[in-house]
Length: 163
Image 1 (cartoon, rainbow, N blue to C red):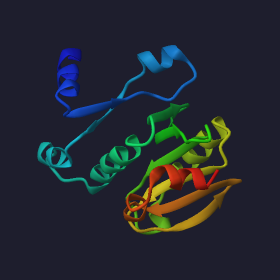
Image 2: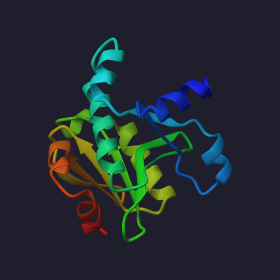
Image 3: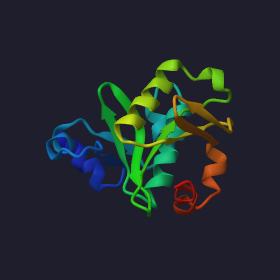
Image 4: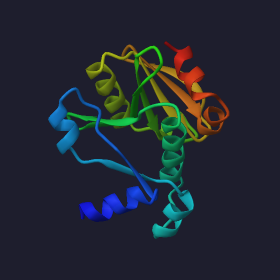
């Protein structure tokens, strides 16, 4: 199995990202996430096209150009992307391809809050289909930004401006 994954990585079909952790063993032995370099291939391999998965894949490619991106998973809470900005501040980014705030479940907000508390972060970004707003959730500022708007920005400038 590992040989197949290595082959896909070496042929630039997939990219592997590690879990964000201060524990070296958690980084090494935890499950990894994989992103396809070609969203057309993602569409072709899936039995049903999932716009949310495609958006998350595009978001990963966008962020990985400027940052070393990991994912966060701790105590049953998962955040799609975590990275350090130029100011060495941790940035949490969750991909939810939604149009309205009420499409977001309380479980997602709770997961965002718990992850932010674990990492001592007071601002989290949720990349959406079209929702743009700021929401305070138990002292955590959740910034909702449309993917299209983020893709038109410089990621380094965008994520440094908030810290």
